[in-house]
Length: 117
Image (cartoon, rainbow, N blue to C red; front, side, top):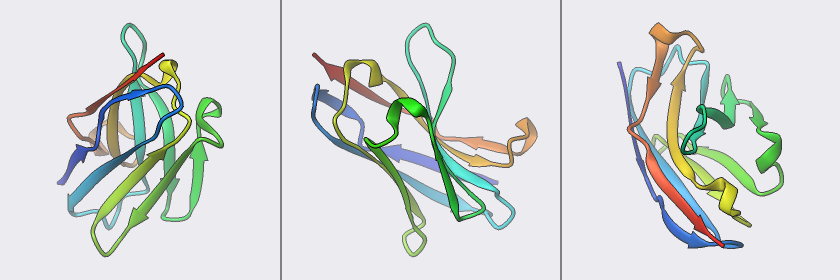
């Protein structure tokens, strides 16, 4: 089992920055991917950024150059630094860890990010 707890969401004006954190606990030795998804009102959950096999990173086109995913293995924490935020970034952001198989995917409860224009 893997437990994920997000923090750092909130409200910010367009152009501002936020950093999300995700505390990770449990058995992650066999986990292939760790990252962040988001779900805006009325929309499907979408990938924001992910680290695969502890190395390569992938970002949604909409956040490239603005968001940065990182991990601190010593603190068992992953982060999402979000800069130049836009109103369309408003969503609930979910921390993810898993193997891209529903029975082997773990999710945090989510943290709300609201960007005002």
